[in-house]
Amino acid sequence: MILNGKEIAAEIRAEIREQIDALKAQGARVPKLAIVLVGNNPASETYVNNKLKACAEVGIEALKLAYPTEITEQTLLTEIHRLNSDETIDGFIVQLPLPDHISETTVMRAIDYRKDVDGLTPENVGRTVQGLPSIVSATPKGIRELLARYQIRTEGKHVVVIGRSNIVGKPIAMLLMQRPYLSVPSMSAASLGDATVTICHSKTRDLKSICLTADIIIVAAGCPNLLTADMVKDGATIIDVGINRVDGKLVGDVDFEHVAPKAAYITPVPGGVGPMTIVSLLQNTLQAYHEHTR
Ligand code: NAD
Image 1 (cartoon, rainbow, N blue to C red):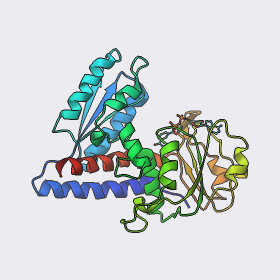
Image 2 (spheres, rainbow, N blue to C red; image 1 turned 45 degrees about the horizontal axis):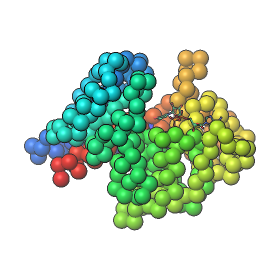
Image 3 (tube, protein in one colour; image 1 turned 120 degrees about the horizontal axis):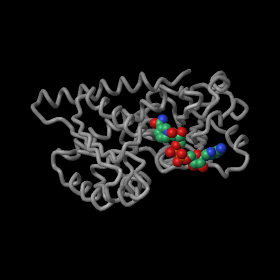
Image 4 (cartoon, rainbow, N blue to C red; image 1 turned 120 degrees about the vertical axis):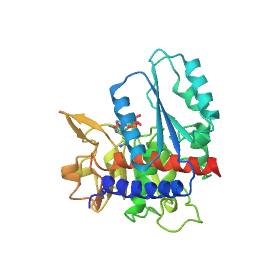
């Protein structure tokens, strides 16, 4: 069965739109997001435009703040401090990557975690690790939501994560191994967890044997055809996070054609994890708004 991220994301957007319409009807202000873009990397510009479009669609006010590549780290940090204290802004993101002369770590550390709707500040990552209320980064949040909406349980399952990045591999592993929040109704995203997680990466030996023991495989490596049918046991769930361009075509990290017949559930690329990532940003902005206006 295909896990249709595009369809689920549209469903969630409709829910967000409904909540924002209700705010408007009460005469309340709407959530406001700022997106900081440095330089003119075409991929970043596309991502930012998609985010602006998604905000407009649900009624989130979004503002693009574009700066030249030559901006100094100090000036960018001043801008971030200004955004931290701007009461009209509920959340903001700094589109990555940044030019080489600016330290992403320094920039991330400067963002007030309550406005960090990308969930990438050390404070939010630490809170997520400790199971405290936090803003969870967009891609892992989207994957968890997708699993929940298809009622795919993770309790006691062996989840293999391929890739150990700070934005996907590490946080999704952490979320799925955690004890779920006990107070939430079953099969909401926050009730997922309790999995046994193995994290694999480029130095892992015998990836195939490890994958063959997995109930759920999450691939975030950026290598086309990394996961092939001989690495997957019958009935596994496959989440393909990869985004690769091959011969002008967008493909994931999974040999979809041959893996799909063996899988119980599988995400396509495009139309799987990608749309869930964008919608998670909208959810995070709404979350930050509610915390801010509480
Ligand atoms: P990354 O690019 O920073 O790192 C890749 C990871 O994969 C590393 O940890 C590396 O050790 C591992 N890896 C690479 N080759 C491997 C191999 N042959 N075997 C095992 N492990 C291997 O990771 P990232 O930023 O998480 O990005 C991974 C992919 O996911 C990229 O294609 C990226 O474009 C995509 N991505 C998609 C979304 C989305 O919304 N769909 C979001 C973020 C990233």
